[in-house]
Amino acid sequence: MARSIDYGNLMHRAMRGLIQTVLGDVAAHGLPGTHHFFITFDTTVEGVEMADWLRTRYPGEMTIVIQHWFDNLTVSNEGFTITLNFGDNPEPMVIPFDAVRTFVDPSVEFGLRFETHEDTGEDEDDEDPEDDPPPQDAQIVRLDKFRKQ
Image (cartoon, rainbow, N blue to C red; front, side, top):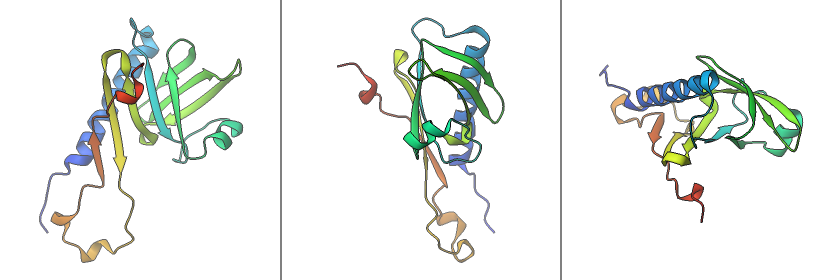
């Protein structure tokens, strides 16, 4: 069987490591300057913990903002926990890095987007592994939608 380098997954691990490092620094030292983050995540991924009313309101995907008020930010190899304020109602959340779909810091026009390819249902043993697209692509996210008009 031919061996190939899985650049897609390697890039995902590197990008998640970057997010882990950035959030770990913020947990230890706070947000520097005008930095703030928009983090979109898949609420259906195993390990995501959030209040039932938030899960009902965001059944598939949710974007959180880490900026003015947040508390209890802790970062592990698997993900992060944070308490955010929703209408004067502090809510703790657990977000695995595998659930993160976008990470954007509009203060410096930096962004990452993680894309996953859905399983096609075909038998993988019948396919040539060199022709398979990587299971996940890593891309830079366009920041236009986060810019103030």
